[in-house]
Length: 223
Image (cartoon, rainbow, N blue to C red; front, side, top):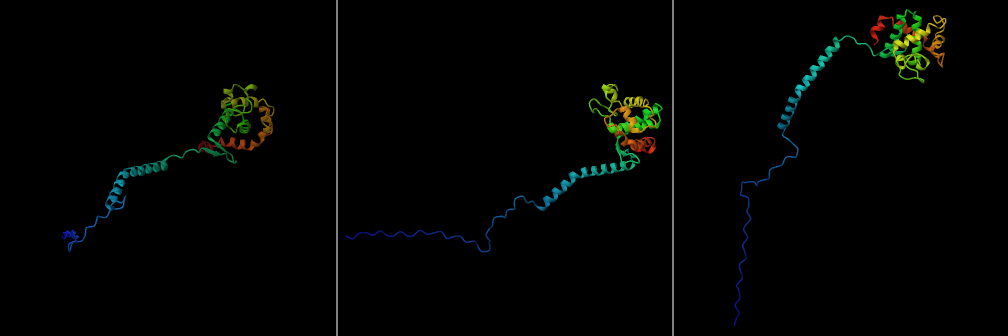
C-alpha cells in the first residue's frame, strides 16, 4: 500500500508596501521654536507697554528736578556750618561760635574792656575748645572747666555759658594788673591750672576772634 502524501500549503502573501503617490511629497512634522523665544511683534508690544507704564514716573521726576533747580537759583545764601577765624587757620563750628559770642556779650553787658574778652576766649579755648562740656578732669565742667567742688557753682550752673562766663569775669577783675599783665599768667590766676603756661598759645587767636565778633561780615557768614 502506498502512503498518501500531504500536499504542501501555499506560502502566505505579504501585503505590498505602500509607496507615496507620485506628485505628493511626504509630510514632515512641524519645526518647534526654541524655548523662551518670542516673535518680534510680541517683544515690540512688551517694550511699548513698559515705556507706557514708566512714562508718567519719568515725567514727574523731570518736573521735580526743574523745581529744585529753580528754588536753588532763587534761594538766599545760607550760613556756613563752620567758618575760619580771620588772620588764623582755626575753624570753628556753629556751637563754638555761639559760645564765643556769649562770652563776648557777657563782657559787654558788664562794661568790661575788650581785654577781658580776649583773656576769657583764650582761657575757654584752652580748657574746652569753646565747647560746653559735660565732663572733664575730676568734677570739671563747662566752657571754663569750672569745678563745683571748688565753689564755682552747681553742675547745672557751670554748664550754663552765661553763668560760667560771669563767674570767670568776677574772679578776673580781682587779679591785680589783669588789664596789662601777661595773658597766660592772668588766666592762670583765675583758673589755677596744672599747666599755667598753656593759655598763652591762644593769645593771638583770641585777639583775632574778639575783633571778628565785632565784624558784620563774620556775624553774617558764620552760623
